[in-house]
Length: 296
Ligand code: BQF
Image 1: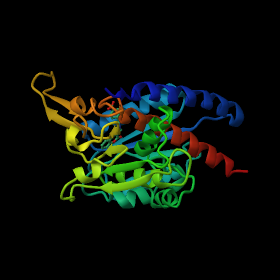
Image 2: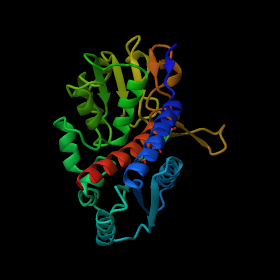
Image 3: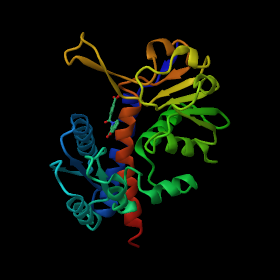
Image 4: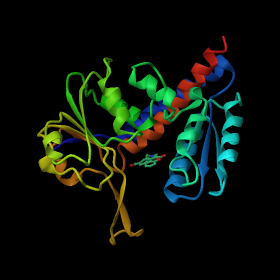
């Protein structure tokens, strides 16, 4: 039976530390970090993510503003809102909740954010810095995975990490972060994805398996090496008539069976997702400190 990694506990711990840090920053700078979260449209999942981010900010003392726009907002209108916040000294983080409606160009919108305020770490400037191993604003979900490993004393150095999935939000950045010759990283990394003829060939070799493929319960027991660390990044809705809502959320890993084979495993919900939000708070504080330090 694996140790079940408690994302709720670790996220609460991180948030408590960040709250103290903000108390200190308040004394040092006589101001607090500010984050604006921009939501376009009415996607219910996005709305619930944004609400939990705003709530988490307020819990720890980040000044949080929520800007909600109709799905019909034009690209130019959205860009001018971002420009306003790029130039507003009270805001150190700008988060545009993804996905955006079809008519808005995600890449153009992301590139319009001041890279110093890009708390999602999606701007090509920050992506480039991540790849070459410079300190930067890291994408929140991969950053949260590294934090979970660290807090459970799981040292990736010299281990074989297999990442299943190649998204710009999870797969590519986590692979690059774990590859760096740094404390908390220094792994041998394989990235594989849905086009593989037989994914099991790869997944079976993982000391640390990161599932970010977006398919419910895809990683089965026979795809996992005995004693592997299994990190489940998936958030999938599957039909379940026994629940009130008619669905439930499951990960990319067949938890019920894989739990018997792994040494550590993250649950869904209650695993990586909560760390995503905690690391957004951390990035907002990092952006604040960087921006303030540039003023001297
Ligand atoms: C949990 C996200 C896909 C697309 C856009 C806790 C979150 C999720 C799950 C959360 C996510 C996923 C977020 C749990 C933010 C993570 O207990 O399992 C928290 O709020 N997330 C997002 O903002 O945009 C997404 C996934």
